[in-house]
Length: 92
Length: 92
Image (cartoon, rainbow over all chains, first blue to last red; front, side, top):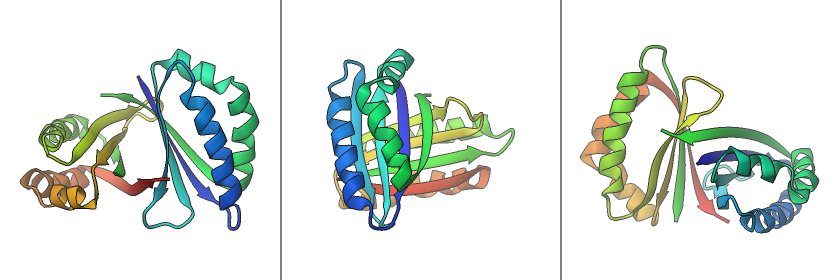
């Protein structure tokens, strides 16, 4: 299993666009065969901070995801309206 | 539901102690009534980076967890041997 923690600090005034894009990305990603979990969270303290917690069956599923139309179309738009910090993990 | 992402950068030479402490903390935490998920992950790129991804039923479960013997005993020991970055999230 591979877990990805994608943190975003959204630029001022871009939250609505961010939420729309992530909702679209999340709906499509959850339908992918290798997707175990794909959930958007909001920081309880920091107003513009969000986090997508993802779990994928294996690296092949992650590679497939990274080549999907929804990923290649939406992720670049997200990085224009938010600072992103992506960490990739494996269970211990 | 409340999700906590606890990132740790372990000090050089302290990984074995870190893993022992987190294993103890995780086993006890997973037995708590309000615990949905409590998993330790290792960063696939950064050697000394780890992340605990937690999911709790609600804030009351988190408060209860923070007052348990295993939490109050182990977490201070972890912060002596690792840099910690804790973020608390709610689903969107």
